[in-house]
Amino acid sequence: MTSSTAPRERRVPRLPRLPRIPGFRAIAAAVTVGALAVALSACGAPAAGGTASAAPAIFKVGINDPGGDIDPTTVADYNAMIVTGLASDGLVGVDAKGGLFPRLGTKWEPSADGLTWTVTLREGAKFNDGTPVTAKDVAATFETIIAPDSTSPGKSSFAGVLDHAAPNSDGTAVDFTLIRPFSDFPRLLSGANVNILPAGYKPGDWLKHPIGAGQFVLDSYTPGQGAKYSKNKDYWDAKDIHLDGVELKIYADPQATLLAFQAGEIDRIGLTSEVRSAVDVSKYDTVSSGYNKFDGIFLNQSVAPFNDPTIREALAWAIDRKALVKDVYDGAADVANDSVYFPNYDVQPKGLEQREQNLPKVAQLLNGRTVSFTITTANQLYGEVLQQQLNAVPGFDVKLSVLTSPQYYADGDDSPWLNAPLTITNWAARTPSQYVGLIFTTGAAWNASHYSNPTLEQASAAFDATTDNAERQKYVNEIAGIEWKDLAVIVPTFARAEVLQNKRIEGTFKGVFDFPTGFALTGISIK
Image (cartoon, rainbow, N blue to C red; front, side):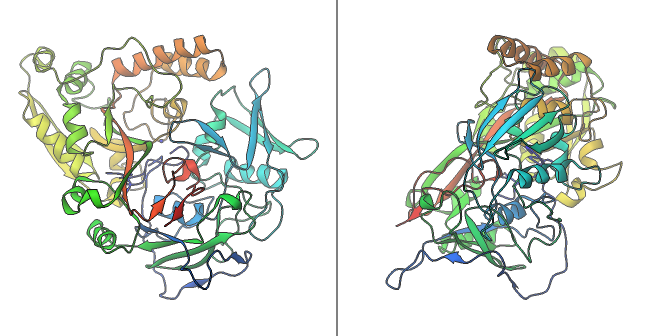
């Protein structure tokens, strides 16, 4: 599925954005916890940005309960990613336009054969306990992720790509040795579980000793209530962190989050249709930070009716994509064309007919048949809108099954999101080749369509192996054409991260407030 985790539903949804699976699926883990705050003291003194005459500049963010797995290496839930991400840093980030920017890595270069990527490390970077970030730490972080016994969701992003990581000869860089050439490898370094930790770190104890090289220090975490952070004086770009701290506040449901936003308890909220109808939008700033996910309509090609290619094609032409943009995303999305190339990816498919609702073509493809099936999803709004659209088209008889996230993403061979005839799952933005490896390939762990096409896999491997622009364009056209024709997954839209924000917040965010940017707050301040 994101960037380096399973698909996740954002509880806003998103990232509708819920963890943003997979990128990444967000499955909130149920956990019994005490009511006392976890005091955190071993990770360095916070930098006090406030004065006696001025209130501290604290950025306040609402989240859902992150559950019990709060560790940089193993975290899968979006809300838990925020908890760890504010205190951590990785090598590379992705900005609002889809470009890469340096974090703990300052430069990345491939070898002539494409089998080694060398990432030069930032001089002077430190963890929040004052110890330096070294090439040994970086290599150990990735070796932990890809180890045979690893439980990190990030392992899936590197499967079949990364063989091992090791410091270079003088310790100023890390050499990543690949199993096969992968031209988008630097993008994998912006995933959810790839924040750098000290060599020897063992997953599972992070809340007691929240080590990291991030913008802030985690001072306290209270289960069921939230977390408090102060500025990290040892952060490599501390001069551009204008906030004194961040406060995360946990809310049980969207209504509680909305009330908190209206009361000024938090500074931002996802701009959904419900939020738009409840508040005076003109009193806030609308912030759009780039694309963050697509909600894929996965068609299980191993069972009826979607083992029939004419049924799949009829369904694709029956969908009113512009209406989805309006009714599901409240305008915060772009129409897509059934391939996984986000609009801000640097190579775009060419030569494909744009699909839109075409009822005569649907009638021709169905040829008098009536097709019955059930939509299975954890995204109630999307499911209801799609069901209504299709039942208004002659030839479709569609039912809807809305599950909770734990039900939808349940473990086991019969998990609904991987086996039901038609599912709707959101996938966080990641490299196109990752999607091929995770959802389009024979034996892929998250191949909900039960689909494969050797030609697609060969074209994707050829794309990964070249850095020539003309060759990349050729293979993108071929890959997108296969995805458009075979319809293992219908991709009707690409969603944008759009939020309402309190006008007291100033500055421009690097991109989505999410793991690909490292939850970057550089340049952000409070009036």
